[in-house]
Length: 588
Image (tube, rainbow, N blue to C red; front, side):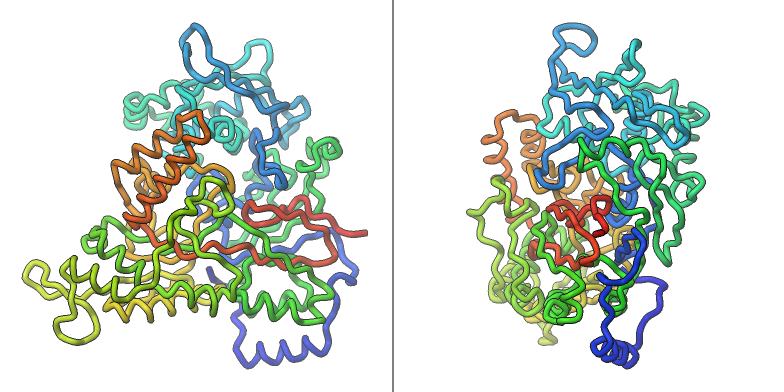
């Protein structure tokens, strides 16, 4: 997560820190405008939320693009945003959608685009078409798996009915969480007008359209144009902020719209508010640089400093009087992604051996300093569906060696690395291991893993890459092991994108290339089961299978370590990144 800002020399950084400690300016007391300065750990290259990319970009684009509904940051329940109310599904008794799940949405009367035109049901249908376009790879596609059709209300351009083929336990959340685009800007020539959601939802028809329909092909290219990702004259949504400046090497500046459509609704809908006049997302790749900027008052919020720096700064009187320190629980877990399609890593015993060769307690005690907890899977440990009966994979070198021996890997030449004869050639057990260097605790953790794995005869060769590059390479399948974090919702979770075989990358986000019929069947069953208790039971069964299969290694679940300026009142949330930019209010 680093790129293209000044890298501070160790000696220079020490001098700066020394002077800062002696001559600390209190940022909370500085005269300032209503501008929130936010640290970005990695560069943002795309602002269109429907296109694949790291989560950092979606933090920013969420202030530009809106959805039909939004999760209330406190209750974590879906609440209406662009629509008047959250609908409950009904089952049509007749007609073409007989027996399906029907949702009726009505957009707010006040909701308008930047050009003053109303946000209509046609914009919603257009946006859904973009999500399920077979030529695009969107992070949202699997959530609209059951989408079968949509109809405009002929008497009300702000009203529509949407149909899902069957009950989906996250149906309303899925429909409400799709980013809505202004059709006039993102399809000015009506290239998708003659293509229906019904056709795009039919796999055979969609495949034929992808091959033959020139309009669909042309729009796919048009929609992915760089201008729609970075040009302030072109990027446009219904959110409170507009793009003012963007440079991947520096960051992003968003400015609040003076005539934003929702300015008059913030009293009755407090979570819709947007208080800062400017949001400045500054790319600060190295932690030393971020700490120095914090001391000088150039940053108002940092999430994710190393535990050591977090505690050190919290104990610093000069910093403590100017900033608040918050440990916010979150649904993010750190992991080692494993390419299950790799010839060696396709063996479950090898994957299990890697999991047993990690000193988890050392990472928790010496690197995370007790500020994280072990997790045994992808489900948020605070949720009732988390399988507490599973014992996390223990650190056990003897067990790791035994598993490798069962898979035919032994250190036959005494060089400390297990080997095996493959196709007549002796092959050493070594893997490339991608990590982000110089950011957070990444180096310390991957070095610790490399050291402990060596005791089991597993050689890991670290390759430091920017998080954007890791995302790109893992999606393309050009990796063996990769350290990164994953985020899920704090509530019930649909794991289709992560583990289902139909979500295999690069089309989906199953970047581990993991395929298991039993897992597929459970995921599918969970999605359509109405009884919550039964869903939770199946979710726990699914977690047990994942632990046994080890498609990836679950390290720990870390809370957000958030440092915020006392010049502002912040709203914290379990949702990533742990606070809400727009709800940050400058104190008078």
